[in-house]
Length: 76
Image (spheres, rainbow, N blue to C red):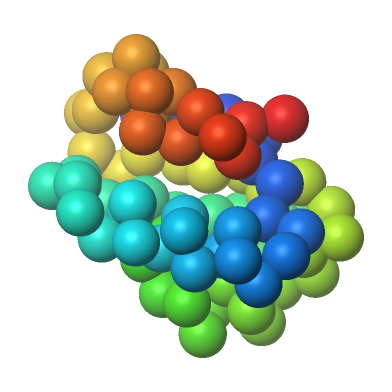
C-alpha cells in the first residue's frame, strides 16, 4: 500500500483527478484526518476540506511509480 500527499484545491483539479482515477485499474482511498473516502467518488471528494492536502492511499498492492506517474500534477 503506497501513500502520497495530494492537493485538490479547485473544482477543475477534482474533476481531472477523478477522470484519471477512474481510468486506472486499481483503487484508491483519500484520507483526511479520520475520514476515508473512495478516490474515484467525486461527491466523496467534495465532502472533504479541500483546502488541506489529502493522503492518497493505493488500496491494492500497486506500484508507487504508477501512482506517482498517474497523479503527478496533484502531488504536493
